[in-house]
Length: 568
Image 1 (cartoon, rainbow, N blue to C red):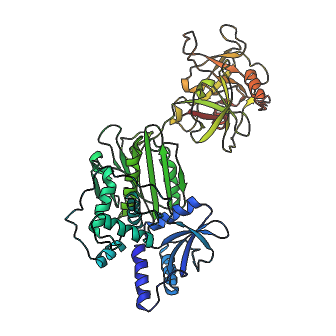
Image 2: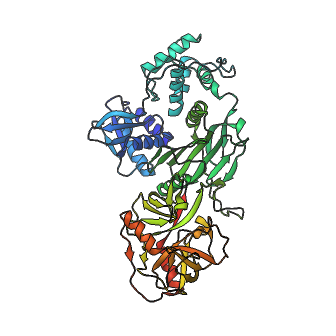
Image 3: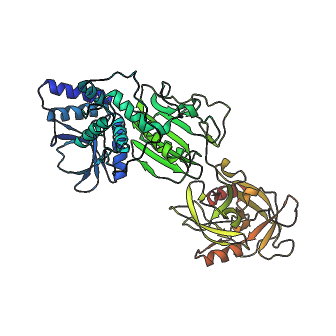
């Protein structure tokens, strides 16, 4: 709708005698952004609707601008008023003469690449595509999207006849390359490719995709049209906000179409949710603005690419998941998909009833990335320093607190099975441990807080028992023996006295040489924990004597003190 509106305004201006703007015309400046990546991503989002009118510029004063144009005075005023009325562009958009613009950064240029020899012999153009006169070819060329124009330039570069930037602007360099390609392939060198010639060029360029069964899929439910490798896909399966085209063979490619109503907040939420999925590995570049985002994810098994754009209250995009080690085909396919992406009317509406066939580790049928193991820890200072077991963080590629905050291991004591962690982002714990300064009383009631079910529960579970002895069964001085039944996930959790003072840290039952009764457990003594903290430069807090808090008070204290520790 946006593109049709602007085209209509331009036509109206021409009918009233307004001259079309050339270099030095006027622009509608719609965005000011601090970073290059943000400006390019925002411009790409606008280009989904205005492929011929969007540009990004570096500013003389610093930062970047996204602008529409150039236009004549009449066009610029009409475009600004109309798009503001439709709510398509920000309310602070203004008309600019471009004097503050420096280097153009969108459409972005690309460094020249060495010609690549075709993998197969180019196939003749489809005779079903009618040939065109130069005037007809120029008219059909004008209907190409920015992505399609960039793809033609990339194909010309691959053919060894073009060394310019991949910017979608068909200037003298692109025209000369087209003429050279035509001459090399037995066509009249007009410098304007006909539809049949474009098909011939792209057919040779995309020969690497032979066997993937590239088809134009027009999906009315999602409101998306896109070219997909249907020979290796099946589906779709609709689970809003996604339409999944799963792999035909185990370990094969997968495509997910994204379609939902939304605004900037929902786009930001989708950005966060996607990064919890197995199909979006943690390693890779991320870019996000209020109108669009792009996510690359790589590991030893897959390379996924996700694009999503917010336009007119609708969020649409796609994810391609491709097996690792096949980068040439993946890169060629992702460009084909981007160039062919079209918005159709409609959006995939949220499901009214999710049904019973659900799981907490699935999001709309997609597997959520889960940690290798989880344990419990607890806060020991106001900066968010955490203690847990050394077993919990051994050989972890990454450690997180409450599944969101990355943490680093400051020190470990394998003998005590104790680790000290520090968050790598600012944290403000609701409570920190106050350690009991002396020995606890044998027979006293105790409470252990932990996450026995991993992240399935949003708050820690609290188990009650008694202190059976201030030593281990073999007389160990640094452990307390408890009469309590706990789960493996409770290991690392705080052991609280009746007044909320921490008397120790729960130790795992695994690894002991004895098979103990279910109600026999060990906790690492508070004094031993304080010693390790002091050696790590952390000053522990000593608890003040207080009255018994009761079960409700201990559960409340445990909720602010205890944290889920995940090993990834």
